[in-house]
Length: 607
Image (cartoon, rainbow, N blue to C red):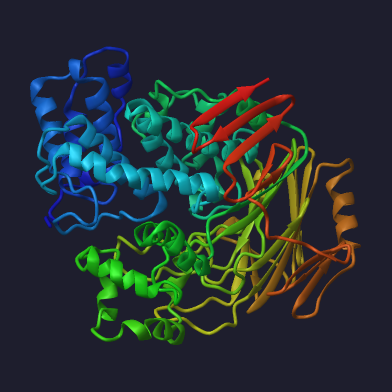
């Protein structure tokens, strides 16, 4: 692989501004298209993002381009490596949930575009490529229909999932386009049910610092505005991969989903998405070994005892020794070691186990004035990576959440960005929410993991004091008001404001706990603070009690003395109620109904 790559190519955009002009029938400066092809030809990570744009251009705007640019795009499309099992070494990430549908879609549509041409890397004809990747796309779509999204509520990666679906809707054969439309409706529904003031800022399977601390920086911001109406964005950015949604000709947002997004009534939305690691073996029996492997790697589960043997089988089958993301698995690829790998994993306790994105049961309390959301009892004490366990979002300036700062596992640039000081968690908390209150207990005393860096002895909160209309911190209490919304954040130990970051509060201790309560009721912030201080509150080292909630670390929670069930159906909400695996999904709101039937390709909206 050529490592001497110009920075202008490495940092190039995923699309280009003038694609909008092409869509309006105008001729353009075609150099940005050549730059996209350069990126793809180098097989840099995220080349698949750029291929989405190149394919849309080829399908839609051929008549506006010069023969030189058309030939360049064709060479790029015909020579690309579309999957791990094709020849050639590279360091592209193929396996996460978003990358899978991107690669599958690009391969299928490239083959469909050039059915009689020979693709030089794989040696397949376009028709053969289309045939190979069609069942992979259908399996990916079906799994999301049945079990939701592994990268749950991600305001980063939903931006990557949506464009390939838009390409399928516009350019795939009719049946596949219909299925892609149904799954895109599910992404839109998820954003609609968790939207607050035009923001999609809730608990998430994968979320980064800037998107958590600054809601206006979320990658899905323009998508939400395009789908549900403008609020913050003056002009859509066509250099983003999301431009494929803006240019999609054949998708119409169901009116019911627009109305749900704008619903100002108080609602509780519970979802269950993804799989536990223990389910992968059953998935292999049900869906076949290849699909189970893809689901496992979409979870980014590699070193965990339940799946490590399959990881090594796939690592060998796809010859991934040169891939920068997976090269370290070579140390485990020892003849005769296979049957011992689960035991080795348990003994070593590798910190990489935390990368696995397991099933999430999420709870969101959505009101006109704020949204509070939590991944309920999500693997407390386990290592974390990019999982964002709970967050309160009041407006575009104010989000509140806590984490246990982690450290990246690796030193190289390709893999050193998470977990980090604000991304994910070093050790995940036991968190539980009931309506407007969330409790979180962090116990960071567990056994150190293989390759784990120094584990910090504190947790911290993002509490943007300067962004509130008024706010103050006293002892273990922090209070803030923005308009009618008041927030209380309580710690088990004194809260230390960071003099270099006015939005950070630090709580020291190997075992810490936090309680957060939001209210939009009448009265001043001082009166609210007085009421919170007067509440009975206790922690005995295992059980945290606050108001009518008791959370016992590693066990569960009770509300009014009754054990809370946090094993949810696929969706429990005023907008729809259905189980994981249901063949027909229905959304309802104010007399409207949207029916989605994947197998029969039925999508009906009724008044």
